[in-house]
Length: 234
Image 1 (tube, helix red, strand yellow):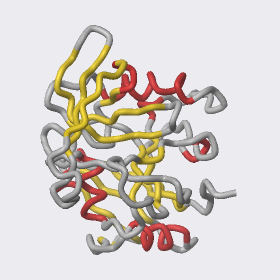
Image 2 (cartoon, rainbow, N blue to C red):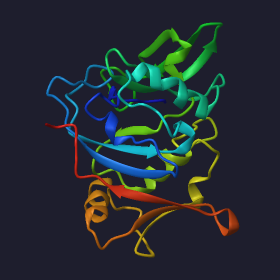
Image 3 (cartoon, rainbow, N blue to C red):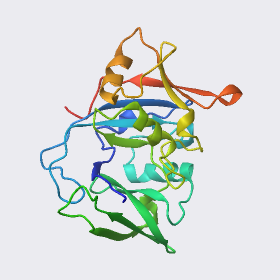
Image 4 (spheres, helix red, strand yellow):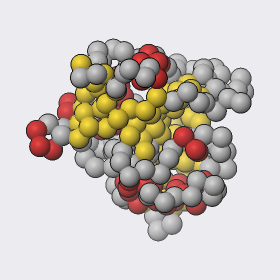
């Protein structure tokens, strides 16, 4: 069953972390949530998280990040292309600064109908389905920022980059297989069970060079992982 968190969107205090770039790069930084932040189905308060980001030329190299977030979204939406019915999509609400992964169940002229089923692990809400009709500009095939807990392992990050299935686009604008993605530090492949919190610490050391390698042979792409010392916490 499809599950999701009610996750923080890239907020005004964190927009500057996603930088217009001529070359792609990955990064992560801490995101401190308030005690009032709740799960999508009104469960316990969300813990402190990390935000996993992709900066990519497809998102524009001259984007003015002083503009309201809503005016930047069409650039990102065009980079991922139009979603199909049955796809896992990112549904954004800039007003409440939230994002949720849902399934696209119907396409209309100016709106999309999206659906989310509560996890069977949450027995109180198991079987409950949330269905919404939202403006099509709020629905994205993929999105370049994910809110995750710091213990999220590299093997899960790989699926976030490539998409976990054929109907999940992932973060990378072009099709890529999760089996072709590996994380390296100073030329040595990293254990897939290392969490993003540990990866952030590793990448912040001046003597460490962390890269994400996608593909193989002549089509291989090396994308640097940039350490972030900043956060959304003032």
